[in-house]
Figure (cartoon, rainbow, N blue to C red):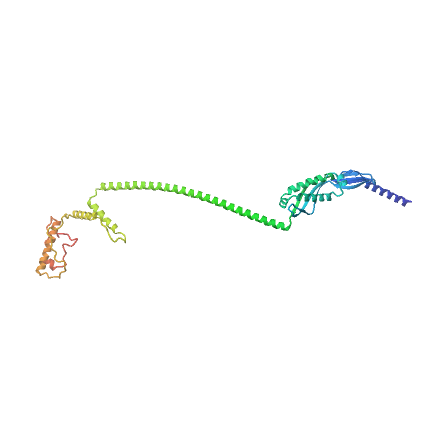
Length: 382
């Protein structure tokens, strides 16, 4: 009896737990629960704690209301110029009506994929390869418009459609690479030529400016040099003029005579002879006159009269050398006497106030070591 009561109690507890499990339904955030009663749509459960009638109402579907991302595998598409390209797409969509998404279409993801493929082939089929590769934005916009319109009745909103990649055939890739390489080389050559032209232009302009500046600098330097030369010549001429005036004034203040001028001429003689290349001397005629004046001045200073030439010319005999003769020879004695008389006459002419000393010819002849009265430096009349 007790055992039967315990079993009955356990069955009641189990029934209560099952009833609670069937009655209480918890729907997660951003989800929507579709409830059916006897196989017919009853209502939509929001997120949170919900109570349904057990064994009568059943939670059939749990729909995700968040934005979903679906990537479709690459699909072959033929372009207008009959080239096959592979295009893979990415769809961003969101369920806005859980009831329509549940009862209007069986599998909305597969439906979106097939619709995307057909729409993509329709759009790309009207473009050539180059336009297909460069018109991603227009393809995306066309796909989004068609898909959004077609999936609106399914309770789905397509937010974005992106093309992940457009892959042409390998042969087309090779041709495109060659073309792009040729285009790059052409642009490089053009840019190089333009750079060289610009560099040549800039170099020419720089050279032109440099030449202009150099010419201006040369002109200014020549002007300044000419001005400096002119001022230097003016100052040099003024200095020479002042020097000449000073020398001229000093000469007139000193009152030079003929002797000073003759002495100056004699001082210039060594300068004329300077230099190892001087072979021929050209002596001005004024120097001979100056020397004559100097000689006359020296004679006047020494007391020698200007006319120092003896009136009676002494016959010096033959220019040929003679053999020595003895003092007893009458011819030798006569010659000595004539010489002594000539010397005495010269001394008397030089010193008119003194009486010439008589010299014994015999003593002169016999004593060869006696002082010669005509020897330079011997005083006359001693």
